[in-house]
Length: 336
Image (cartoon, rainbow, N blue to C red; front, side, top):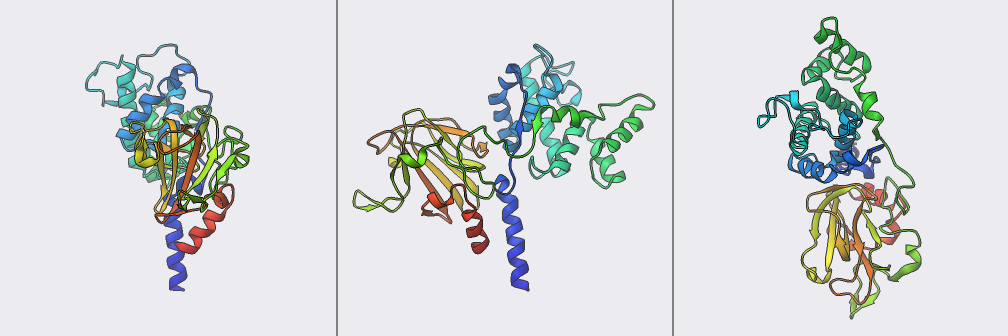
């Protein structure tokens, strides 16, 4: 019994760290061009403030705050946060607004103990607190058992408003017009499987495999899977995770050329080599299906192709059986 309990605990710990391999990721929706143009800046500050996985949430938050405005100086509507020490009388610089808005939201995430964007209850508490202030979190924890609800938001609004509306009790409804949870099917190719890997390339990739894992290459077994594709073909993240290598400067790159490596959880990594260019940066959090680079022929390569590797406990294994199946999950249940 003790051994079984230990296995269950380890599986729970692993599933929490594995992110969207155990639960699908959300996406910002209905963004206008102005808000979309903030993506790189939001990504930078989210990484700096330790919440890189919340970029989509932050884009949706920005859209919910000022999406209907043409050119707001304070797109994150955070002038009243008390954090804008450089412009205490009102933020007029959009870049400064993004910096303060992302930092302000990061504080709410930490105060609620929100584990990820999939932690809906604490995410909603953090968002409501962005609108109403940290006092909402304390009120919710004290009087509603820490469970967010519209009723809780209304009660806090009435308490703080003294007869008038304080904040927006329907703020989460406003946010959800710009954000959706769960798998977004049809937005990228490959066999998406929440317990496994999706294909790193567009449909038809199987017919373009030029070298399987284990085949002899230069006198030794091949350590990955080669897939021939035209230069510039998008390469997709096979699963959620954090970019641990984004080599876009050394064209040799240990013979891999320009390459990306992603850590999906302890002991689970994927590598994408011989890219023509890299579309992500070190430390960035990516979702399954995000474009991370483009097919090329850099490094030790004789033609345009993707060299794709899967690491389990630092051992390279054949990635083919894991794509679009639950084999990875079965392996983890047996190993951890």
